[in-house]
Each structure stands twice: as structure tokens, then as C-alpha cells.
Length: 477
Image 1 (cartoon, helix red, strand yellow):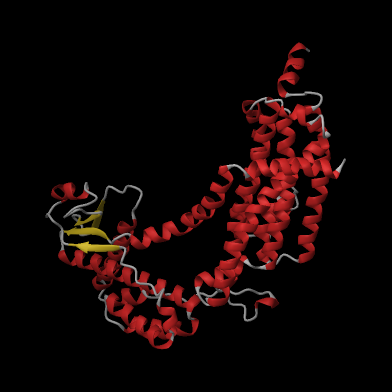
Image 2 (cartoon, one colour):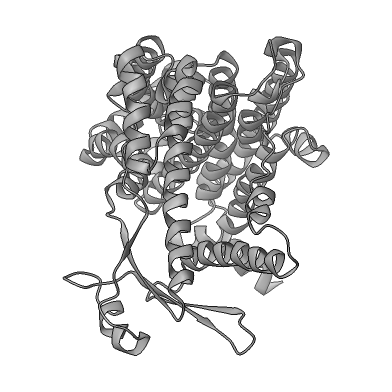
């Protein structure tokens, strides 16, 4: 095999892909699409106005109890959001800010009190301080019956439009019945909040009937033990798990999906390219100058260089932004997640996984493409390969839950699954020796797969073996 011939094929394929307008379009749109998928749900949630809910009740006291429950829920949500933000942006202020929050009489005053603590002691953390609106807004019902409210519930916008309505009645025995009316059939949170509030009210009534203090129900409901999670590994320091310790798992999940998408799309690119060149007889012309093995190696290198170009540009921009965030905003939520993407184990696992995964699947797809005369024929062969590619995606969720489960450990040593599961297991304390072992097994498998793919590729492009001819011989036999 001549290196010069391999490089000529690689140069030809690289120039063909990079010279296409689709390459530059994907170069620009892919980061924007990823950023949109990540940021859009958060922005939409924060920009959504409070959902208007109307309360109807036979007993006004029941309506007051449920309304108070929604106010308490809005305050609790705000407290959790502030606690999560401060634990990442200004941990030393968390206790003082939450104490000021708890001492305030209502939600608005509590937000202002916590914000004032941050303004005085850490003004730099004030820019991103949570200020979201409550999720629900209790409004006066425009009518005094559900039947009369139905037109309001059927409108999503305009004056008097309602997201939902709660109708609280009492049966013949005095037990509450809660009816939740809404066009949003998949959402039941308001009824859950109302049910919890009325259950507490029923407990008060039951205690009062037994001659006990009704407030005892509030005291019992207020029992809420504090929970802390700890990491037993010596490298964890004090051991308490924070966002900084969890962030690498989130980064690994994101990188695993990115790696899977890239390997599949690039391998599919190779498949489509070889089928198109074979059907147009371009391969026959090229094979007068190079051998099938040189053609296979050149195509793999050429498309690998296309991917490397994308990675270099995205890596320089993304890595620079993450490094800046990790250095300038180390205590912020974004800074801690950004730092997680720069973990050496994750970077090593991603690099090893991409190189090995691309070579394995790329060679397989090239071999399959050489046996097909059209994309329709290729679809019949892609089914088993697609199932193999789907397995690591199925295992990712249980791998996050327990990266050291026996089935996950065993699957991570299967070379076709290793590129993706190695990423998920890397933040769980995977030793460098184990990473090297998996990498060695993958590259050993790469050599075997390349050898087999070269034989199949030669049969497909030189001997003109194809699915159609094979089926024809089988029918004649």
C-alpha cells in the first residue's frame, strides 16, 4: 500500500466535502442548534407568564386553604431556586440569604430580603440572581359555576382566559371533592397541590374531632429531615456532593450523545459517498490508479480530516469559552459545568472514543456500501448495524444511575459499545489503567475490523459482489 496514493484519495474526499456549501452550513448551524436545544427550554420556562387559575368552592374556607397552598408553593419554589443558585455562585452567602428569605412575611418581600444580602456582600453575583415569576396566579373566577367558566377555559389568550379551574365541593359526609378543569390534559400539578392542601385540612378536622389541637397537623406535616449526599473516595476531600461533583456526569452525558451523533452521521456520510461513486462508475475509474485497500484507507482518512476540521473550529471556540467561564466565573453554575467539560478523563475518553468508534463504524459502513448498488439496498443491511448503535444509547440512562453495575461494566468492554459507555463511566472514578485497557481493546478491534472491511470492500468494488448478485445466485441455487 502506497502512502502517497492513500493521501491522494484522502485529499480528494476532503476537498469534496469541505468545498460543499453544506459543510459550512453545518459548521455554523450545529453549535447554534445545540445551544438552542440547551437554552430554549430554560428561556421558555422563565419567560412564560404565571398560569391563571380560578378557585370555586362551596366553602370559602376551602378556597382560602388551597390559595394559601399555592402561595406557599410559589415561595418554596423561589427558595429552592435561590438556594441552588447561591450554592454555585456564592456558597458562603447561602445560609444568611435563606435566613433573610425565611424571615420575610411573603414571597415578594422574601426575594427582596435575599437579594439585599447578595447586594451587600457579593454584588458580582447579583446579575444572575433568580427573579422568576410564580408558576401559578390565583385569580377571581369570572363566573360562579364551572359551566359558566367553560368559555374562559377554552381560550388560551385574551381577557378572562384561564389555564385551569379548581372546583372544591363537599359530599354528603363533609369530605372534600376536588375537580380540576383544564384544556391541558397532560398536566395535573394544580390538582396535586390542592389535594395536599385539603388532605392537611382533613387531618386538622380529624384531630379537632378527637379533642386535639388542630395545629398539631401542621407540626407533623412540617417534619422534614435534612439530607446530604457524600462521596467516600479519598480524593473527594470532605466528601459532601455538590454541583461541582455532579457536573462531570452531566458533561459526560452530553458528550456521549454528541459522540454518538457524530460517529453515526460521519459513518453514514461514508456509506452514501461510496454508493454514489459506485453507481456512477467513479470508483471504477479511481481503481485504475489506486488499490482497493488504498481507496478504503484514503476515504477513512479524508472524512476523518473533515471531522477534525469541525472539531478544531468548534473546540477552539467552545474550549475557549469554557476555559474563560471556568476561570472568570468559577463559582457560578455555568462555570462549574464548563469546568467539568475540561476534565482530563472526559477529554481522553472522548478523543479515544471518537477515533476508535469512527474507524470501526466507518470501516463497517464503507464495507456495506461496497456491496450495495443503491441506498435502498443499503437500508436492508443497515438494520442490524442500527440496532447495535442503539444499544449504548439504551444503556446510557442505567449507566448514569449506576456506572459500576455488572451489565454496564461488561458492556463497556464490548468494543462496539466502548466509545460511548467509556465516556459515561469516566467520571465515576475510572482508573487510567482501565481507560488504557479499554482503549487498547478498541484499537485491537479496529485492526481486525479494518482487515475484514478491506476484504469485503475489495470483493464489492473489484469482484462486483453485491446484495443483488448474491440474491440472484441464491435464487438460482
